[in-house]
Length: 133
Image 1: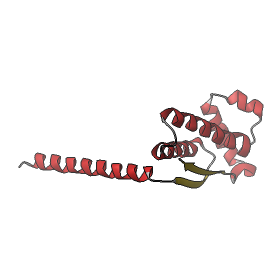
Image 2: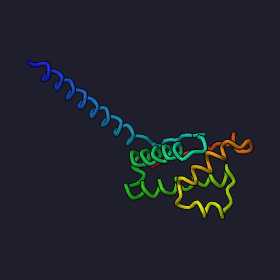
Image 3: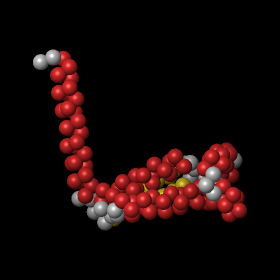
Image 4: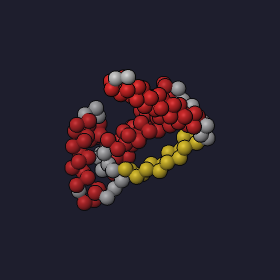
């Protein structure tokens, strides 16, 4: 057997092992009664976006919602976390929030600048998530 054939065989074995492991995780997730997490994240959309994705994946794996419900859950959680950062932690006025609506780059600039100010520097977003069927 050639070296290329041996390498291909090893690669196929790795892919099959990965697929078997993923099925095992899916079965384990479906057997889960609930998942509960507590997070304390920085005031940035990157951290909160990852958190939203995690919650969406958990909700889907437990069978809490279909793909449409997963999207709605993500949108609601994303908006709540944005408000926690912008309105709660950085104390942006409703008028400024309205002016920043849909302008993510401007909102990111406010976050970066706000995180440098002494009165906002130590503020974090604290989230408790419990996903149940």
